[in-house]
Image (cartoon, rainbow, N blue to C red; front, side):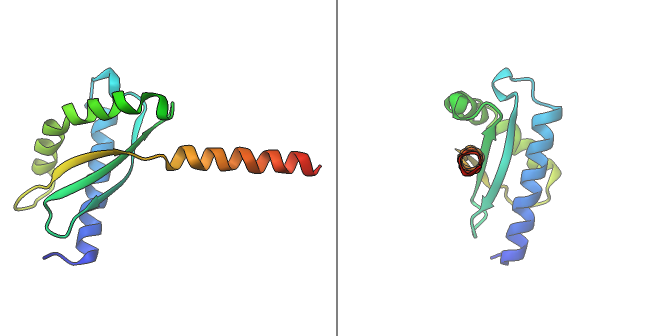
Length: 117
């Protein structure tokens, strides 16, 4: 069983490689403006949970997740060639609302600052 540090390195490498593939290699229009916010790998290296978000926000979440799922075989095959692991984890894609929540908090704080003046 890999150590926590090794799991984090694997997760970081998967995040970097998928981000690079989204920018350079993907031609699917559903995946335009998508970015990977986080990746977590379980201790058995069976699954990698990939959290994605988009510039447009949640309006395209279902379309983006469908596009990511349809490209998961390509991602897994390309990642297994780039990252040296005995068995490569299956990719599961999730929508990450964190950027939208952060934007909402910033808007509320800006509104409070304006009201204070």
